[in-house]
Amino acid sequence: MIVLGLTGSIAMGKSEAARMLRRFDIPVFDSDAAVHSLLAEGGGAVDAVAAAFPGVVQNGAVDRKALGAQVFGKPDKLAQLEQILHPKVFDAQRRFLADADQKASFLAALDIPLLFETGGEAKVDRVAVVSAPAPVQKARALARPGMTEQRLNAVLAQQLPDAEKRRRADYILNSGDGKRPMLRDITAMLRDLQGVKAGVWPWPVADDHWSTFALPADRKPPHA
Image (cartoon, rainbow, N blue to C red):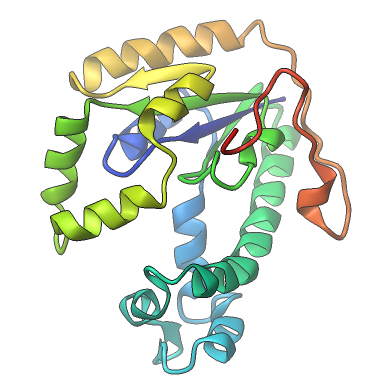
């Protein structure tokens, strides 16, 4: 089974690309949704987050706005939160891929917003980057509730530049001209992937999940 990493910066159209992949019966793991589930009432990360960030839990669930206020713009706090969430999301990804493999899917996709930033390209066979021109991205982002130009700039500062993501991509899915051109890009990508040899799945098993992955010699490490 081929594992595809689907990524892209804020407001690039990655969610729409994921929906299109599902229309082709490609299973897609939504990392953002997994985090939401972990922080919801009864979620697997609620207790750990409550212990690390006092006052962020309300009615049994993590108040994401309160949590954001404690970690946004604070790299040490963000790293602490990631140490709680990332292993749990990783385990959910493994279960998802095992299920897709059992169902004999030829391809499964992992929707990971910070794939390059976290070294996630080491655990996928190919990477697809969803991209749009900067003015289109900015207009889309600022149309979101609660988004300001200052907050957008802060988010972009935490993400690898789009040009660098495009450089590292195996496939570029252009969303700037609307859905139809991106659908053509996805169709061409899926056709090409039919000839790709799977290699990364099944993932190696170890206590330290990140140490089990090594980038192939022809793939560049994060922030190279």
